[in-house]
Image (cartoon, rainbow, N blue to C red; front, side, top):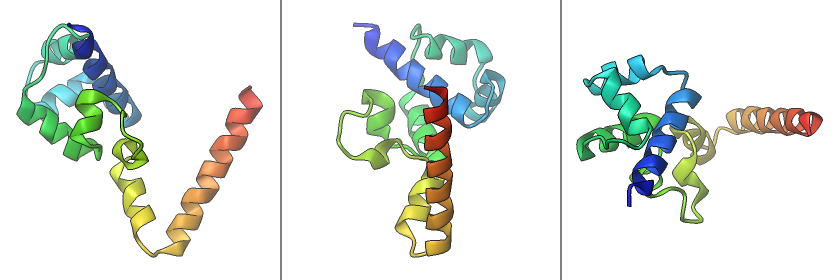
Length: 113
């Protein structure tokens, strides 16, 4: 039954790292101890519901993604808020820049394989 704790912790850890944060940064943001962050990321403990709600807003992901994983086909549940904002707006210059970035990422990934 504790597998869900580890899965939630892994998603929190991944989001933290993607956003360039340390466990210390996250602990300060959530007003809790580094030890509690460490335990929650390793699946030993859970954060409070309020903290998960805050993290979903802060990282720009759905609470469903954060707690249950990306089980839905809605890709927007795991995209950063800034990307969603660009995709929803009619700013074609921003969208073209994002597309260029994604194309560059794809080329780099293909070079590594």
